[in-house]
Image (cartoon, rainbow, N blue to C red; front, side, top):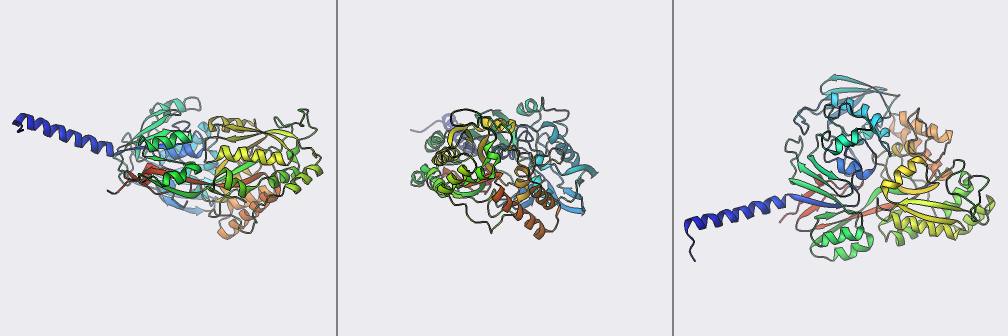
Length: 530
């Protein structure tokens, strides 16, 4: 049949419309994530999944590369111009999403606001060394620190820069609303904020004024799917292009699917367990529920017994189904300050029982053990398995799996006597972890912000403080290695297992460049070559 000219024109228009629609669809990226941001204010919490999401909208002064190497970002260069003064030269020509210029004023404002608005999992460790801020010119800023601060550029990989105009005057009570509505969510990142539905999805669109590489995705949707089975099902159904944290049990099956690609790595996240050493920790009782005369976990023998009752290789093999590795330190081997001389932690159930008896608990005691259930791969399974292992040593343990949104505020309040969560040394420097969790909780020194156990050792504190001001890398590494050795004997926290992670994606749609910090960024996802 021959079409008349008008009909041919309509048919051509329809075909062109379909082509445009298909092309537009090809530029949309949907990622199935396990957890998303807890606010759109980047300073609200230090949780990794929060920062991961907001790296799309807000830039940082320095950038953590795929192997945690420090790279320029909004700062082009930096140098220590005195023992306690760092100078940062800022990138010219950077625009915020509202078209305004990025300047040193925005850096100063972003540093100063952290102490004002930081929430339940504080971001204050990233800026705690800064004492004074001096703007030299619109693209030069000098920061005076509380003594030599060799790791300041490392800390700034998590210093998100917000617009000093868009976020002016916001307080802890008003910041979340302003950011979540989009009013203050003005960054310099490669994507602009469109909308956020808590526990559902974050919608972003490409910022064509971005200073860096142009992104291939016009629209990005980060869809929260905390249920592992649901995440896998949506990938198989083609409803998402890529999913994070594939359950270990599903990896072999997904690898056999010709439509999918699966990739995995060992991450920098370590599950670690902490035991409160404070008086009268909540829920720690004799097995009959009666009060104990003192806190058992204040006794080093009890902490050692708990350590020896945990079979780390079995946790990796069974609870994590091979997607991980036993850990003997709070950080992984590639982190600066890791102590290579420390031996693996081996289980010894007989010795664990003997130590409990020596400490005065031959029949054990009772407590609840809280752990995250939706943050990192295997957290629920590892936590549940640890509770079972401790039961074999004679301890009566109630496993208490909690969503991250519940777990972290409760942990900060001190609601848990014993808990486990994942921690990643995101700056690539061991002092980041040790100063946060092993130093005495000292608000005046702004150290130990995540130490809620009451642990305090002057020797540990001095090693951490000395490392924090030592500009000589060899000497700084020695301090950190000594501190890690002391963690192994004092047991303020118990490193359990390193978390492995797997991604699965539509083979004909996307490719992914993985990162050891597990961040899944649209900037690292490219269209598959046809």
